[in-house]
Length: 246
Image 1 (tube, rainbow, N blue to C red):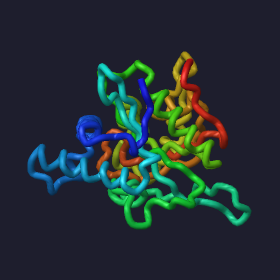
Image 2: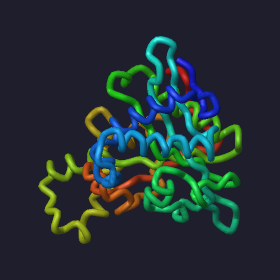
Image 3: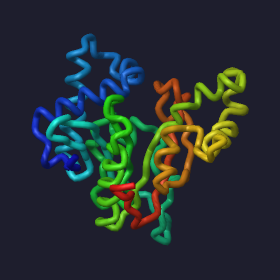
């Protein structure tokens, strides 16, 4: 396996990354890309998003390539500025709406700040056939190494994908959302199973590699029904690099 950035991705790899993205995020994209009437239209829209990301911030768009398997997965990042008066990270200043943070997936306009202090990973795309092969570790290694080399903080902007399942399990009443849900989500993101692992798979991956939850954002991506629209901002220790090997 080889970790490469956007500077080394050809048209074939770009198309494959777009296909994987559409495959992995399909339930959400069916709503977000409502104006697309065909599969071809949706794939074309995803491809335009990836092309824009690579044009604007090629070093922050990573992929794992294999001579036999081809593109095994990808990671998308953006740089943002979020500091307090003392120059310390202020995670409360990070845009809480996914579509505004990423400029609807294109990271154009004022979304990407090349002088930012945070590198935010807002999408990891690995198809099921490549799970368990070290692809996530390789992508996070590349992302955290980039942050370390630039003196920045690597921040996953992830989703509590198991939240809907958990709420159904405890019999949560959707009519109580505004009154109770934020507190329940705050508890859920830190819950662990009998083996000490975090209940939520997405948050657990980053936690396993050293990141901590620094902010919970309601109504961040409303079309994400599995997460009830929530996103979770996490942060790796500054200078930390996810090890490439176990």
